[in-house]
Image (cartoon, rainbow, N blue to C red):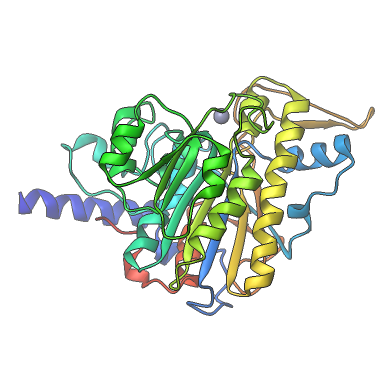
Length: 371
Ligand SMILES: [Zn+2]
């Protein structure tokens, strides 16, 4: 067994050498202070390309707050040996600093060949908890969706909802909020010590120090409308910050705006722009807190763009050129210039969480790491 583990470790080092690790981080600047920030809020617009943002501003006439952040850079979206990513591999790169095979969540590529209970890369939520901080995951997708799962679960298949929900229920995160799934029930959540909620009123009533799982009744495409006593992504973000910031050691929060991608897959421009505006309100809430708090870094990015949104130069109109994910680089906006991210640079997606871990002051040896 030890021999096998050594072989796996050597193979892993080889892969990390070839496909990236701390040592190969090249596009993040050294000009930052380790441990400078106590809290990080990472907001992921699922399916949000630069043109999604441009189209939203053009069509709605709204100047998006995120488009005005101090650092405006970009990130690539590569998954393991592939320049196309799905939200599982895209989310995992952003959560763990490791590029993985599309469709897998929080597991190394070569783990597919191994039996269960092998090494898995630690994600930012787990790392925050291991360092005494609070951690939370908020999404407008189902809580078992690929992006929230990347920050709270480990499984070979994003479709393995049972495993994802089991991992989430067994996790020590402080909050996991999003759309409902079949695998998380009030009974199961309470058995594991969670406060279970399923509507906005109950969310508002939550107290700092509580650990909660939310299963809201979101509509797939227009979940940003406020129909069924469910909170918007902005409202969830505000409340999550309220709860997590009560931890004196700081916190990590991931917020996903999921319906940008869902509308783009269906080529519904109005839905895309509406959901992008909703997502931007969550960014604004995070920035408001960061400004008041002074110790919080806000990072906004996407796992990939969707729909190939393109500008028709003649008519000035934006239109869809696909119903699938783009291969283009995506936006990376940061709330401060002293966190190692620089405007007009292109970083690798997997560099983002590694740099977040650094500015939070985590030991470099901890990340990316197997547990
Ligand atoms: Zn998608």
